[in-house]
Image (cartoon, rainbow over all chains, first blue to last red; front, side, top):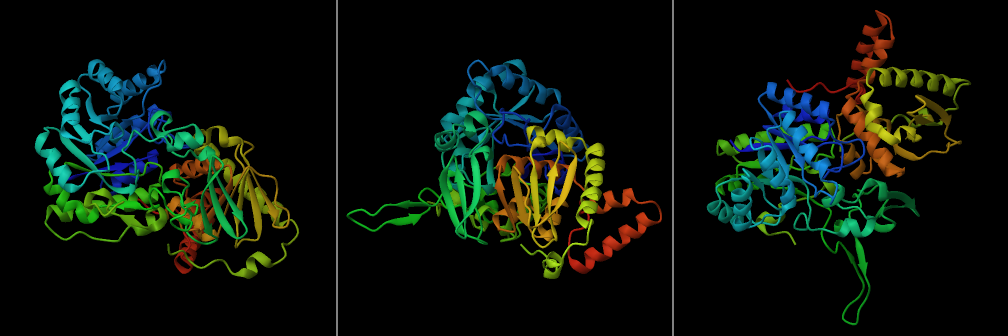
Amino acid sequence: MMELVCPAGTPAALRAAVDAGAHTVYCGFADETNARNFPGLNFSREELAEGVAYARARGARVLVAINTFPRAGGQALWHRAVADAHQAGAHAVILADPGLIAHAAEAHPDLRLHLSVQAAAANPDAINLYAEAFGIRRVVLPRVLTVEEITAINREIDIETEVFVFGGLCVMAEGRCSLSSWATGLSPNMNGVCSPASHVAYEEVAGNNEARLGGYLIHRTPKGAPVPYPTLCKGCFTAPATRTGPAQTGHIFEDPVSLDATELIPKLQKAGVTALKIEGRQRSRAYVAQVVRAFRAAVEAAEQGAPMPAGLLAKLTEGQAATTGAYAKTWR
Amino acid sequence: MTLPRPLPRLFSRLPLPPLAAPALGLALTRLLRRIATRQPAILSRLGPYQAARFLIDVQDGPVLLLMEPEARRITALPRRAPPPHDAAIRGRMAAFLAMLHGTEDGDALFFSGELEISGDTSAVLALRNALDDAELDLTGELAALARPPFDRWLRRASHLAAQRSGYALSREEPLA
């Protein structure tokens, strides 16, 4: 059966994921070493050790994401995170920065290393370099590849591949986006926060809900309509009229939709993918339980060659709409 | 999103009996202190936002609630007098209870417009995450404050009320 890798932002979400059928749960420490560094989220060292014990007792595994890029002079925080994850009994750590990967491989030779999506390794040569140089055992593929490209990659590499199947989409090649940094001074790659809540403001103005990021208006929706989180890449913008056409208002980069690749699971299995990843460490335990339950049923169905269940999770998605993303190239 | 119907409109329009708001505030403060003592992780998850003042506007309820975690205090106030606050969450009683008890996802409630926030978004996020991790059960907490046999009666009454109304009055049990 394909491995189901599920998110947990809190110990309660970790337990919910394991109870709902996750094979593996990934989480992070409550600091800037991981890419979901949000207020009130993530694990202390003690909570991680308890989470590992809870998962192990039920046949599940815990991965620790330490997938931001260490600040020059501040590497000790990231080194300590790797050591503490190892100490807590994590099955593997998910890393992005080559320097940190080199440190982990040298200081913790028996610790299993996964390459984060943040490393943006999107071709066999890059992946093989990480595997040969550092002993990386699994790569999380960027969300810019088609199923055919994933098949081609798997033919040319000897390590496991993990792909995202559900949750918020990042439209850039991961690890290379500066939009959040431009608007707020904080980025997912360096600080672990894309569009940080500290720079988000919601306000009702003249019967509309306005969502701003760093003072910039990102969404204006009628009161009562769905309100997306204001990330720049999914914002609704107006381009002024030009000599060749009238002004246009729309989602210039990407619509605020979420990935749902349930229907592609059999193809991904055929493409040689080992593990399916669900995004959403920032979401609640209710979300985690519902999504994991649905995807556990889907991977079991795929194992038996049965049809994929569809449309079960629309209400949980950002913008309450879903896409199969780049996998089928219907995505802009 | 399929939440049960709002509370009857009459409920939010009837004039409050004298001392009803202070009495409600005292009861909720006692509940908050009990929860904070039993689950200190809620406060540590709030971090610097313990000092924030949260306005809880249950729009189909009769009063506004001001929650101050650091002071371990909840104050009930008439709707006509919104107090100064750092962050506000607005929505129907059904949405608040569903989020608190983990039957619905907080983000989904927000994306669908069932819950609205204003003010310090970080503070709201920290509160949402802290409460979600706490796996609270309001019926269980209230029953623990009552003596036998009232605790059993309260649990039974809550169960029946939840069945009839569709409101999430206690925590959803984890899967077997």
